[in-house]
Amino acid sequence: MKQPVFLLSLLILGLGCRGDNGNSANHNTDALLASSLSVDSLYSLAMQAYEGEDYTKAIQYFDALLLQDSLVSDALHDRGLCYYMLENYPQAERDVRSSMRLDSTYAPGWLQLGMIYTKTDKTELALSALKQSLKLDSTLAPAWFEEGAIYMDLKKVNEACFRFQKAANLGYEPAKKALAQFCYE
Image (tube, rainbow, N blue to C red; front, side, top):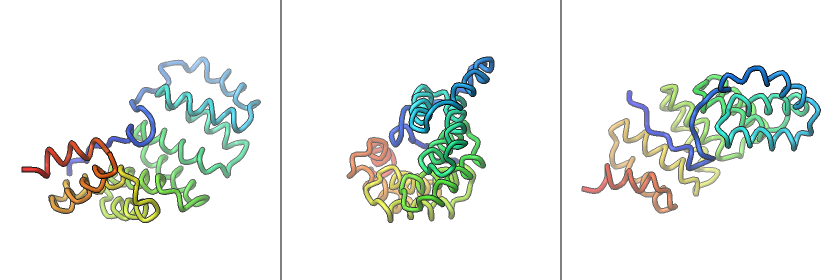
């Protein structure tokens, strides 16, 4: 089954995958520095690394943060997003699920879980997670779009176009493109 195209960059931040760029010599120094920083400072550094598309370094900062406070649901969720970007879907799922045990009402968490399930060919679980995200926040345009992409893959064009239209009505550009490509004749 062909995977739907994910446009997570429009949901969170600019994307792309690169590892640590061979900078392993700096990891020990970074770990020592990280252990002496506050949770807020570590979160800031993790997000800077994420924005710079250095997901491995971001994970290291999130790890250090979680050593200080293992109940920070944002850090678990965002570390899960880093693992997702590195295509480590089992670890991404573990982190997102851990985050959601702390805050099960976080709609983007359900969206991310749906995207992980889609990438791992668990279509029914993906649809269930996406429906939960929309139940919590019906204005979450990427969730409408992702549902549409799944229905398009299932050859359920009417259902797909309905969801693309919902996302487009919320201003989601990829949905507008999908409507033009698949739904208008």
